Image (cartoon, rainbow, N blue to C red; front, side, top):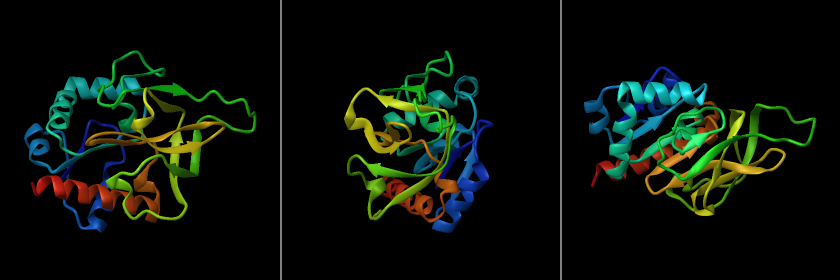
Length: 208
């Protein structure tokens, strides 16, 4: 079972429906006991950085996430959920979860034809091998909606890149913690395949 964290922000139902298509049980929850029992965690999110971190901290979910990450449990952050995995963001003043060494910066675009937010379908490039990319071949396209992007301290934490005026990290990773800036739950077959790989990672973890 995968826990989809409910802290008041995110496309919870869409993610749950995608997992149902894959054949994986999920539970939308903010209960510590349920999260501890889960084989994996998905941290969704839509909105502002400080609003997201405030809700995580006030609900106690921030500490639960940190503890479960330290255990090696697979965690997938989506959109704002990905940004919250880092240290901080230019969008706010609060500290992030600090699980992956990166900071989020607002797009600074020189091309006047490119608008912020970066919105719509775009192509990504894989920066390294990882189980969540297993079997994904050909051009990979995902749906983005964001004004801020991750800038990693080290290239080893960049999982995918995308080009929007300049190259930026479209997905990040550190050990069992993964973040994707795009919305796999809105990315049709591409998102379904990626979430399917995350499910397999969680099943392998749960079977240990």
